[in-house]
Amino acid sequence: MSFVERFALWSAEQNEAAAGVLRLTQEQGLEVVRVAFPDQHGLLRGKALAAGEMAATFRTGVSITSSLFAKDTANRTVFPVWSAGGGFGIAAFEGAGDVVMVPDPLTFRVLPWAHKTGWLLADVYLPDGLPVPYATRHIYRRALERLAAAGFDYVAGLEVEFHVFRLESDRIWPEESGQPGKPPLVSILTQGYQYLSELRFDQLEPAVELIRTDLLALGLPLRSVECEFGPSQCEFTLRAQSGLEPADAMVLFRSAVKQICRRHGLHATFMCRPRIPNVMSSGWHLHQSLKDRKTGANAFTPARDGEQLSDTGRHFLAGLLRHARAAAVFTTPTLNGYKRFRPHSLAPDRAIWGHDNRGVMVRVLGGVGDPATRIENRVGEPAANPYLYMASQVLAGLDGLERRLDPGRSADTPYDADAEFLPKNLAEAVAALRGDAFFREALGADFVDYLLTIKEAEIARFQIEVTEWEQREYFEMF
Image (cartoon, rainbow, N blue to C red):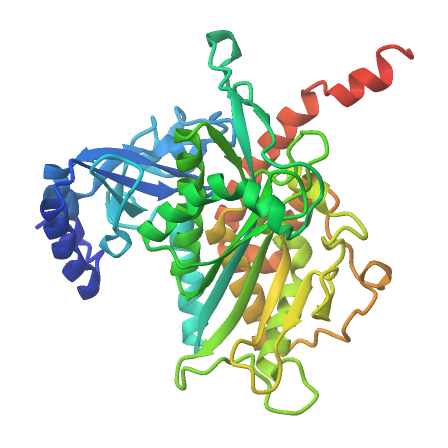
């Protein structure tokens, strides 16, 4: 009996889909299939397999080193993998032992930019068939199962800002390599602050067309493309999807955009605030609602005149506000992301909500009779791991539902509101999560401590780095 069969890792739908993948692989003459999993940072890691190996891969999975779960954003290993239990207390992790990627046949795509290449997203398991406890797709799936038990499905639409630059130099000389290496040198594609300018959009169009064409060929639910506020900045939105789909779409979207751009002499970045003169911060606004599993109706749509949200929606929203500070590590996981939270900047600085107000953390859209009624959380950065971002929303919102929390009054003047401030930096966010009993119970204390260990390693590396600001501030004066 195969690994997948022995531990019953696939549903009937996945078994049926696997047969379709093998058929398509042969019909389209694919030569390679990439199998990748989203790591703790929401980055894709995996292997490229010869197409003829896929039938065996669907039975046995693909072995990968467990030390991938021990790495920070510089690919530095921050856990003692050579010690007992590999620093995790898990026998399979000891000595950087193997874990198993099991492809999800429902995620199969053909990559339009890569020659005869297919792609599959995978889940990661221990050799005994148990989910790797630090694999974030598993974590999000468990959050969705808790929500389903309460009678709801999670629905999310993506609104993602990012920059596309012209690549001037890869900086791939050996002396410029490292962990991390020197960033590429770039120039901008458009000048000035020209929000939704058709002229600027047309200047971006050659780059946007490359991205758009391949995203549509992938089958991603592209909804709109816009010229954003800053130079060389754009925004893509994707139609609402449910369950795992929006998180899966986000990791594929980001990876696809970066690969497509790189092949055409461009550099796409989802870094929140690049250190490039005059550019603007980028955000990831997450539109979300709940679908009633019995009726299929939007559970956020209010029935009473004068209301913006149903009681279900209000309680869910209240949960997001209540846990906003502790959730910041999930919604804004990089040191750089906190440079976006400024007053009067179209980015939130405190945990408040408002009706159609772009200065609040959670913006409510829709109303009575509107089946698209939803809430838009504007706190996220585009570099966030989508599985953790969405899991934090599901769990916090569910807590609001279960405890029937009240979100309070709408904040009409968001930067003057009397409300709890969001963390000012990653260290403050880490401290908020470390002391938060709710997420430690909802996600498991082991996972929270694991993630905080990685984030604290990044903070420690940042703190010992001598920045240009320090050099400019002190070198001449003292």
